[in-house]
Image (tube, rainbow, N blue to C red):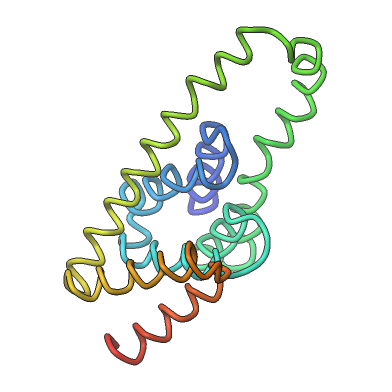
Length: 176
C-alpha cells in the first residue's frame, strides 16, 4: 500500500503542477506534509534546500528522497517514475496538438491565467517556510539569514547553491 501512496503523492502534483518543479513543490508539500504526514514543514524545507543545492530537477530529487525514506529503493523508483510519468505521457500525446495551435489566442491566454496561480502557490509555501523558520530559529536569526542571502544572491551574484550551503553551515554552527 505504501507504494501506491508514494505513487499518488507524486503523480497528482505531476499532473497538476503546470510549470515544472517550482510549480509542483507546493503540491508535493501538501501531499507529503499535510496529507500523508511523512515529513514536517521544517523537514520538508530542509530537504528542499538540500535538493536545490544539488544539480538536476528538484521534483525528481524530492520524489527519490521521500520515496526512499518511505519505501526503500523501490519506493524511490516509484516516486521518480510517478513524478515523470505525467509529463512523459502528456508530452508525447499533446505535443502535436500544441504545435498545431501555438499561435492561438486561447493558448496564449491560458498561459497568462496560470502564472498568477503559480505565484500564489509559491507565496503560500514561502509563508509556511518563514513561519516554520520563525518558530524554530527566531525572528532575528530568520531575518539575518534572509537578508544576508538576498544580499549575496542579488548584489554580489553568488550562486544560490553556495548561499544555501553557507546557511546550512551557519545553522549547524550557530543554531544547532
